[in-house]
Image (cartoon, rainbow, N blue to C red):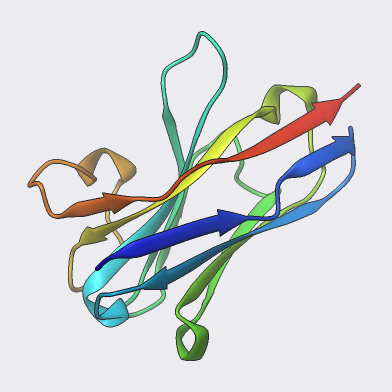
Amino acid sequence: EVQLQASGGGLVQAGGSLRLSCAASGFTFDDYNIGWFRQAPGKEREGISVISGTDDSTYYADSVKGRFTISSDKAKSTVYLQMNSLKPEDTAVYYCAAALFHGTVVHPDAFGAFGDDYWGQGTQVTVSS
């Protein structure tokens, strides 16, 4: 059974940092891209960062580039999202997802395109001003 468990959300002041974790199980990590998405109230879901389980190549949305860093620990089948210089507009529910793409990193829009994707429950991140 594929499982993705996101954790690490919380309340932080603007300018602060948080590290999210996504623990994955039930699939071959190397064959998947793992991504972080977020959804704020009243807004569409946004794909913010993706890492390839094959070659560790990464993608960042412009909204988080330079502030967020995605990484993976293959031994633990865990993907992390280090979030620095947080802003109130980063407030959202953050989700991790896995999509079956062996090879280099893909754009977040590719998640769900072919049906071989899995989603975890979200973790709330709230940034106060």
